[in-house]
Length: 202
Image 1: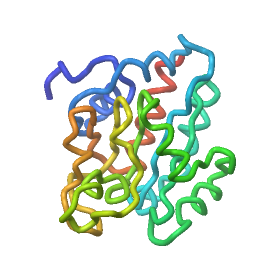
Image 2 (image 1 turned 180 degrees about the vertical axis):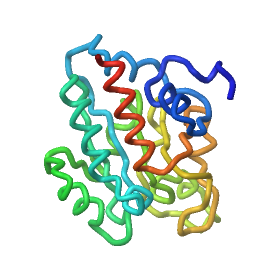
Image 3 (image 1 turned 45 degrees about the vertical axis):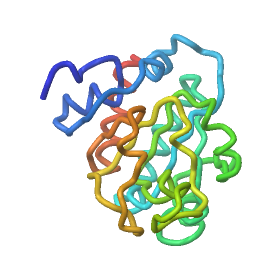
Image 4 (image 1 turned 30 degrees about the horizontal axis):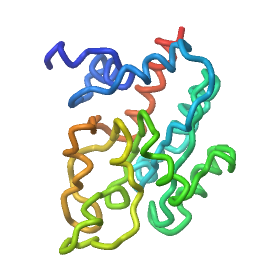
């Protein structure tokens, strides 16, 4: 793996060190946040959970990451699509069981109003519900309401592969030049990310 990938970002630095496959890079803004270099709270950094998080049973890991970032001054919110997971409300139940405060949940309408002002969005195991192909005619999901994650300045996606979601089509978000793909299981990826964040934060 090229050492040029080992730059400036928490999520990528540790993923390389522990041997996960990493593509591209994430802006240094996240790095600054976890080091506490900019302490005032800003706009919420959204985490978008999906089916892959549920399958990996990674709700406690994502809750721990959000809690730690919150303690370091990053305002984390969970942007939840109403049908993310195996059934409507699945993500809400999982995250509540992991002791994520209800006030940290934002619905699709709230999230979509914020993405354009978002520096970094983290997608964990979500696929069709983030696919911009829904805005184009002639696709299997045309017209489906989605989370407008691609409006964020940068996106990090934790996902095992570029495999299709239930709709069986490619996700345009994954090939967006502002998106960085972190190919790993959600539980392993979040555990690695949290460990890296803790190391950087000292």
